[in-house]
Amino acid sequence: MLFYNPKIDKKKYVVAKYYIECKKEDLSKAAWNLAIGQSVGNPNVRNKWETNEIFENSSCVILHDRNELQDINKGHVKIGFPIINTDWEGDGISHLLCQLMGGQMDIDIFHKCRLVDIDFPEEVLKYYLKPKYGISGLRKVSGQANKPFSGAIIKPKTGMSPKVLLEMIKELIDGGVDFIKEDEILSNPSFCKIEDRVPLISNYINKQSKKVIYAVCINGDHHHIIKRAKLVSELGGNSIHINHWSGLGVYNAVRKLDLPLFIHFQKSGDRVFTDPEHKFGIDWNVICHLAGIMGVDSIHAGMWGGYLNESEEELKKSLVTLRNLNVVPALSCGMHPGLVQANVKRFGNDFIANVGGAIHGHPSGTLAGAKAMRQAIDKNHEIEYEQAIAKWGFVK
Image 1 (cartoon, rainbow, N blue to C red):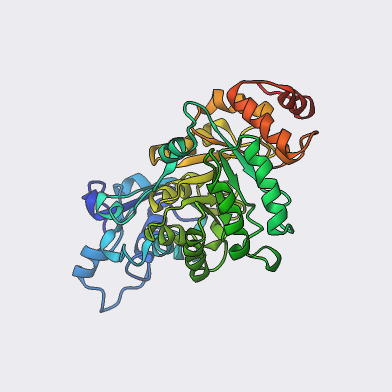
Image 2 (image 1 turned 90 degrees about the vertical axis):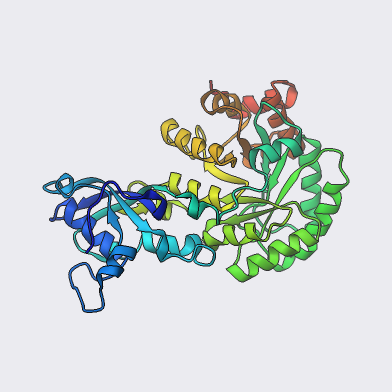
């Protein structure tokens, strides 16, 4: 039968760590309900089809002595999920999340259940390709060493024609950016179709002496994203941008195409399931871990000091996870020239300073805004930088 065992063979399990609060029962009861309910069956009802062999091979294991979890109603619990239960080539992250964050949400004794950490054995990791380029690749392409990357975001978010979009891009490149990201709202509207804008933009970028990564937004349902990723590559693009609402498993599917594309993970809306105030959710650091093994090259990791202002401790935790996987963190949502060195001081150089409003809203326009960011990163302060500081301030 299902058992408590703190000394399992971790080669055979994905180990998930949860923070659980119970309504009435203790953690021992909650752990049992989670473990059996997310593997072999109903937590409270046995049937004739449940053999000892099934329990031995396919039931989750609670990585605690039972006494550790009795008589307390909140705390951390580790559960081992047998890797035999998953077709890692085909089921992937999508089915794993169904196991990790599924039926326990429907059980009344759970008041709160958050997935806070995850550990994969090598037997599982071999099915995931990790970044094709990542930090090291972006440094090689951009020629930038020992400093943050200068990133720009297309604004307005949507509404422009391909020709107008190209004119903006020209100014951003002239201003010295390394990375340009279309906004997550754009995707494939009739007035700015992917097949129209990508060749126009990629032809221009590919002729420049300065190498710039341009992330084309391809949000959509899974089958459309696969088609769009291939199309962007065929049309000469070098990067794609996918928001998580297109499905976490899609990053892995695109990475397996092994296209010559940087893959950017865009996080807007993630707080629907990552906000720590929610009773049921997944810690953002776990999402970063999953994104990294699936093969994204860059990710909107968060922000410090902007209109999104996360704690240094939590942001550092995510940045360590991402950098260990060679994923480029993008710090965005209120970044401006006066915040660049403050973020370097706290988090080091391996990040994209990704900027929308503070580039396009510069007193002298987009070109000047891009130059101001370049000057902030290079510590080569000229009039554009000074104008930006006068408008947005300087943070130590």
